[in-house]
Image (cartoon, rainbow, N blue to C red; front, side):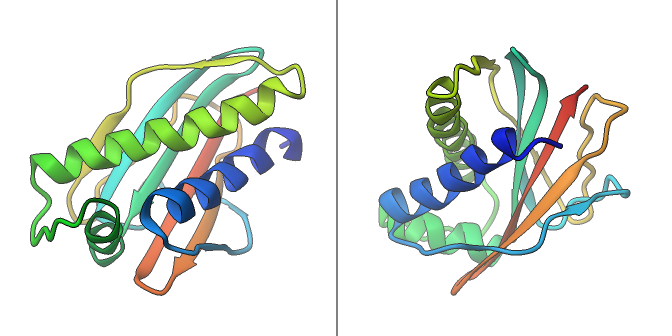
Length: 153
């Protein structure tokens, strides 16, 4: 997969979490994901269309999203309720929007759909593609999360 498409999403993720929640995140080593099982407790997935078609997902462990929301909104959530779902959807939109601006600067134009939120232990993420799914783990001082990219070649 072309890093021209991946790097803006990495930068967007780091930027949004730092700006909105004052949380530093560090990307790990990317890998090809073979299993549809999520690496966390709540996922926002969004479809992408335009010069490249595919999807992006972001999956948070509960301790991580709990800290993000506490720092971002000043709210403490002890369960994955509707407010947490809404916040993950909004974070997915913000990260995707930040990345799309960076891609536009490279003359790569994408539009994004409306995020879908999936929760639960061992939930699955379905990217509609036969291409490789690239997963990128992130660490924070409050827990982990991961991004997944799937672009149709």
